Length: 365
Image 1 (spheres, rainbow, N blue to C red):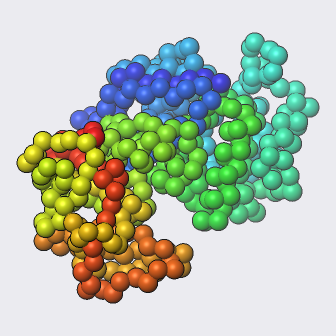
Image 2: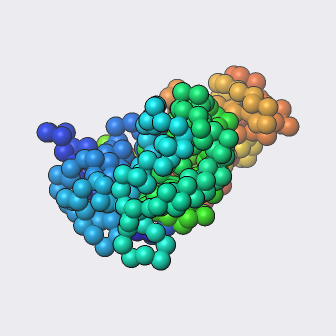
């Protein structure tokens, strides 16, 4: 196992800054997910760990070593790509075996990596195949496999070398929904078995929320927030994180502080804590924390109802601005309101988030 430490790491491509002064410590044995939209710098950060991108500024450590100028093959990492990157002319068994042949491997009870014997390689191939349900396919070539099976071969190839750090770049994005869910569970199980450090890149927040020990959220090359899935969901550091995490996303609207509430049009969202009167802010409420009812301090005009079987999503226009649309979750057993109805809405003050309008940073309670 090994920690991965970014200390002021920057990556530039000419005048474009892809990763900007990144400070991030990924602990021993942690499942860290780098999460963000396309172009946010998460894959570039992963490729710098792998040694596939040079570092423009700063220091990158894996374990006790600074690896800025260490060759990729000497970093003791294994990378799983979105595109599988399997050898098409090799069988599944040979694909899994390939890293064991090309470089020395860490062996239990030995201080130095070494080349494995044929018997040791066969044992590791069999173990990885059992773990990822690949035993029936060891003699097949990649063209004879489904997308999910190919991805499991790519994972098995990473597993056999037992590196200090696993690097995974959107490995599930080519799978269908059922296989994604199955492979997510396999990856979590893999992490629990080996306790190895995993750095995983995705733009899919469901993958991040269900697998990560901690999530590092990035936008435009900058780190926005690091925390457990619950931390970033319950206490987003800024408006970007608040709107990026959550399905449906957090409801937000601009308003002004007046006493113990944020005023949006004729509606008043009461909050916990204190903020300066007259301050321009953005109020935020998660869909599951907004319900129909209450004293009418918040009113909404129903604009859309989506019935999903297990729940309904009711979207209401709040305030005079038609852009201020708030979605709430309603239990499927309840009768949804009709489009065009004006309904009272309520939310507990402690569930109301307040962000500074200028900086977009979260304001404390």
